[in-house]
Image 1 (cartoon, each protein chain N blue to C red):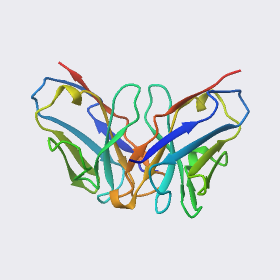
Image 2: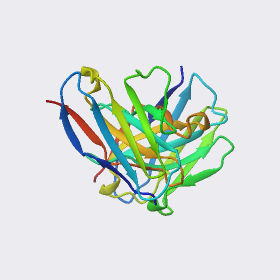
Image 3: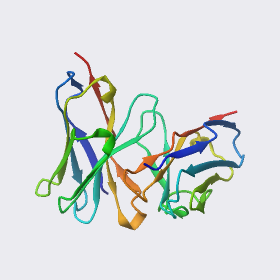
Length: 107
Length: 119
């Protein structure tokens, strides 16, 4: 199985901050890397697919980059509704696997 | 607008079979990968398996031979059966759609249903 490791596991930030979350795969996943946002008691929502493609309707302050084993999710100008847990997921090989999550909390 | 809705018992006894159904509305079941994903309390998401609309399946080896996913295209439903459950199978279970258009990212999800394994 491909192991996905995110860092940090949690972070505190203020509204307006730029936030960067890193995801590392245990082997190359090419560009088959997706990012999700999950709020308490809700299902995850797909934000970015294929490393850097924004799903329709997702604000442009979200962006993704990387390839191979190292990927980044960046949130520019953090908004109050962005406080949530973010997961990366590889869809390169089955079993499809998720990172452990990064919780973005209000400072 | 595509919507997914899970249904099934919220409480299952140890050693019994967990059965859930996902009803898809607002869109076609064709040309997509329909998955079950679970999230134990406080833990990361775990992909259980998928069924393609043709009936082809792919399961997570971690669940060994306990999982079966089936599809009923006439009812636009797909189902999960997990046998010989234990407390470790207690989780929120989600159904979700993966699309080749989004490099197999899960673009639509059900709201999730909590299944507790307890006697």
